[in-house]
Image (cartoon, rainbow, N blue to C red; front, side, top):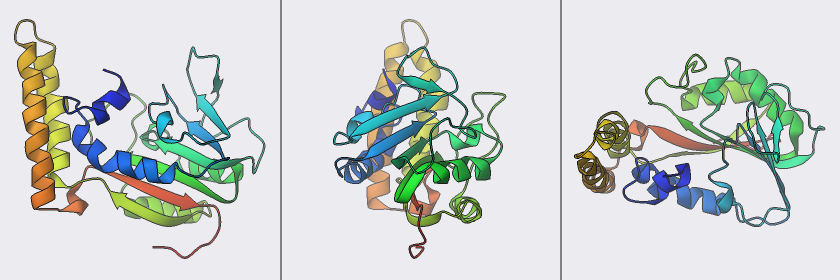
Length: 225
């Protein structure tokens, strides 16, 4: 299953998060005629949620895709004030200098441009040795101020149920899926866990217990939230 599928399909490990994330991306991706830069793009799984862009630029440290610019997030070979949207999805923790990343993003944004950031607050250690921290909303606000960006919007993606579903699907059901003969039980466990945890978040919402958030940072100095 590709990464978008894990958010879109009920048998995906990130389905609960997707119930909160994907409508937000659809809302933010409606404006036509803009230029977007997808930092640490990977396969750009959320590209379909920005269908009206004039241009979609992709950048990553490693890629075999000829469309992708090969560069680091702290030294991007693109002229200043040339993009309207910077996308940074679950990648900022891979760089030890978050302020430099945000400052570089601001350099590329036109006045009034937006940095859309999707980040995890609670996820097991991964992509070693380049996994440096979990950036909490207060830490993002502090780092954004240092980079002369302003936090306009922050949305917690789910709550305690979504956090539990992420860990359950990744740490437990993911291992069962890899086992011969009984792997189908892992898929059943993911589906049932997703339904239960999503209903839990709807019945008893606790957004500050969510594992992930989506934030919008502005190039200008609009009023903070």
